[in-house]
Length: 115
Length: 114
Image 1 (cartoon, rainbow over the protein chains, first blue to last red):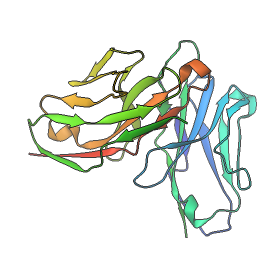
Image 2 (image 1 turned 90 degrees about the vertical axis):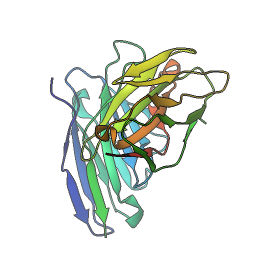
Image 3 (image 1 turned 30 degrees about the horizontal axis):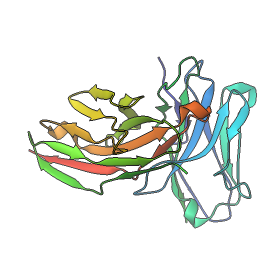
Image 4 (image 1 turned 45 degrees about the vertical axis):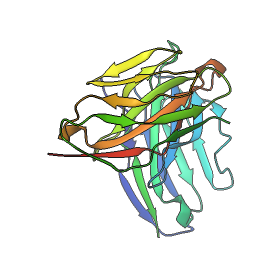
């Protein structure tokens, strides 16, 4: 079974530029998450989708971050314009809704450096 | 809101030593509890989980017991190996609300020396 795929693996941009990350979840997983992991901290949820609807985006900085999940499969996360403090690893995860308390499977992440 | 507190690292142990990584949580409901591990250069992987009070999760020699009375989920292993060197994250999920997203602790780096 293929895991969660993310691209790119690494990205370096200047502040005020824009950037987009892509995620392809495990086939059949209805729930998709984007997390931000700043160096030395645990991952923090940015947004949760169920199919193509948003379940929770309360911690997404909506003035600069946006995310979409068209057709309930792939997802993109965009930052525009980027700030220095956005330097972090952006993790995508997916899980099934068929059972309660099912685990989330994580991709390897995209490491973003804003200079 | 929900939160998870882990002991700070790094934790440095010799091979075959006993490991404990403390984790306590604050939650409004009855969360499920998880330990995730991040090996160097790899993504987060589920290590073990427990979904209700007094449940014990176990995997690869690691164990953790869901203690509701002390709101704790400490990770233990009787004899660590060099290959256990990684960052360990305690996390909870309030799955009963439908939200299901994980709230993570800050992580504890374990270094095991031969």
